[in-house]
Length: 482
Image (cartoon, rainbow, N blue to C red; front, side):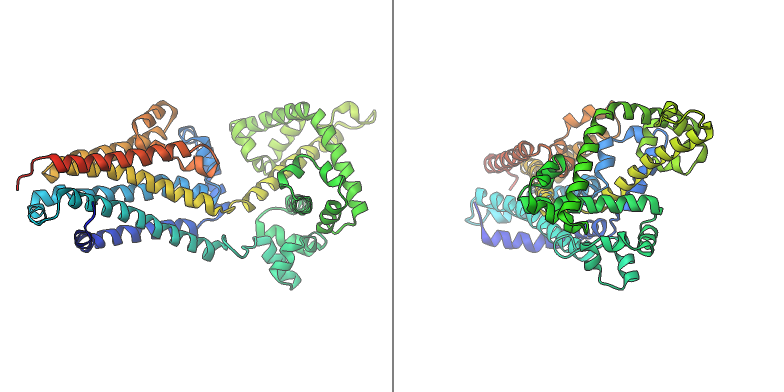
């Protein structure tokens, strides 16, 4: 099934085509990784969501997923550019390996030697598969190298803008500040510098900083307990019942165990109280958003994604505060002026806005959140898709003796799959087109969001093997114009 001589000859004839496409794909992947900026991407997503009619045409999961590096790679490179370039390469190479050689008459020369047909066509199939595999290996290596060089995503640390600004102000190294954020919290000038660096006001930055410290404290407690941080976040009493966890978490906040235990008790009590009134509070916030949306003339759902627009518009903030009435009038002493009630409610609603904006900043910090495993799975999925599509093109290259006939189906079907997949993403009315496309079996979003993808990968692998085997069998048994 394999001839070393034929493989070398095929390699010499096709290496330039492989090198060109591989270089372009690696460069495009590296560019997407290098220019990735969570804040810029988030701004673009908000702009898209605000465009009338445009957001309705795009899947919400695609917009939210694109705010992380892997999500952006999945939606752009592995959802469009990389797949299209790989598709073109596979089609051109598969046609060149068999049908084109039969058409030109060079296959007659190969078959005039003692080498059997099965070895000839099997070697061509092996070259196609190995060229696709090596292409994605190069893309993977270049991508991982770029992640490290541009973002320190594999080892080392990429410090946030506020940490860099605060470190310069405090004249200490960035690692020291990143490991002890109390250096910023306890220094008004550092808070000002950090807020300016992140492009938010000091109220939002202070909330962000306290939340970041709380998250770090939970992480330290989780490490001390030997559990996942999600377990500690869901049940802070795990910390309360462990002196080691209390000490570790308190140290992050610059507190002793006793003081942190007192704060934790208050937090647990407040959480329980908040849970009891969560539904009522949610209803009030929705009422406030609806009133502000009327003032701003946008959809309440869109406004909920960017409450900063309320903060920037005094009329919208006033309408939201009055409609939400987070602090009922009866809660104030008798005779309290309406203006004072309004002012208190405005401050309460403003605190909710600031909390959301601070959470947005936390999400931006998690934007890189690069998982080598998920990145490798993205490349594996892309390879398996090209492996299966290569099987289609190779099969028709073995079936037909003329290049034009081989390309008609060997290129037409894969291109149709690609177009159907794009159409299915345009809107819900065209979503059914995904069932007509093999490309649907490779879903980058399922990988980056830890959905189901293993069965799809298995189907692609089995389908590819079947197609290559069928192509070899057809070529072995068919009549050739020799």
